[in-house]
Length: 401
Image 1 (cartoon, rainbow, N blue to C red):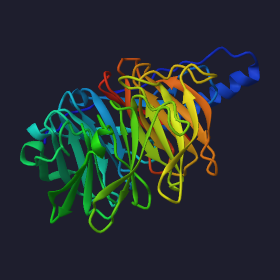
Image 2 (image 1 turned 180 degrees about the vertical axis):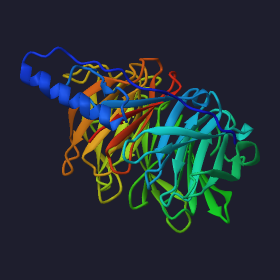
Image 3 (image 1 turned 60 degrees about the vertical axis):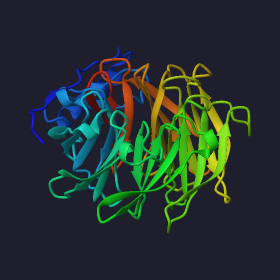
Image 4 (image 1 turned 90 degrees about the vertical axis):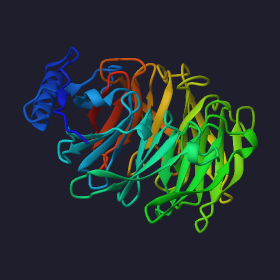
């Protein structure tokens, strides 16, 4: 590891014209509050759509080793943020202030096995982290020090050493909540690896008989019984049942356009499950296909049923070009999605009962580089949102609540 001094860019203040003195005073008070939050630095809400609900951008952290950053994850104690950047082949460690949300770069990890590292995920207990690198066709397993946030490589699973397909163009990797198994998203399906004694060993590759081409994510239900995976080349969403004892998965459903009232899965890219396990949200369109957000409801049989679809250009849902990462707030009340080609963050209110979404607005992220917004996550308390801004080589921090 080597340390580099971070370069911190702070958003400039930009306010719209006020029609009344009262609104002017409200905005002035808001501005002063933001200055206080940022420790005297000038910050403001970016006037994306001119919506009053725009989030406040408090920091842009740009670092040389964040070249093409696409993934961000915050530790459960809120003290550290981890990022994966594929052009630099790096996993970055940042120190985070839980009160202000501000970040400071601390360490970078770069090895041949992290070539084109595109995704970083933490285990539920934050003891481990896993990074997927499609350039190296490898998954790197880290042990995490809770006090310092430091990551130490303990094992690497490589496609060249595992002729199973679970690591061919691997794009995502997640550990089960019991930390006994690791699941990968690869070119032709889902891979299963067992974690024992800090070592990974191959268990299974589920190809779904060719129905899952270009798998882009692994989303796991809160109870660990189901895995939801998007496949952008085949335009499908796979539902797999997971055996907690063996770790093996069994395909129970494949959703695609034209079936079961679904019309927005062409180019399905990322998925996220609500904390209550009742709903699954899918974002489509990063490289091809529909530019959409789709809502699904889970059933007692472990299958999904479509609830609603948001399609770019229909109604007020506009500017969603290059649908990429999607996430649900810790309290389950909000769903946020990023669009890479329009470099925008879209915000929805979620109804916990129906799972339906209400569009709150959208706003530009960073300096409008394209492809831009690629990864998004909430802080554990839901007060801050972190966006990996790909071509801007930076992480953008927003204050939410």
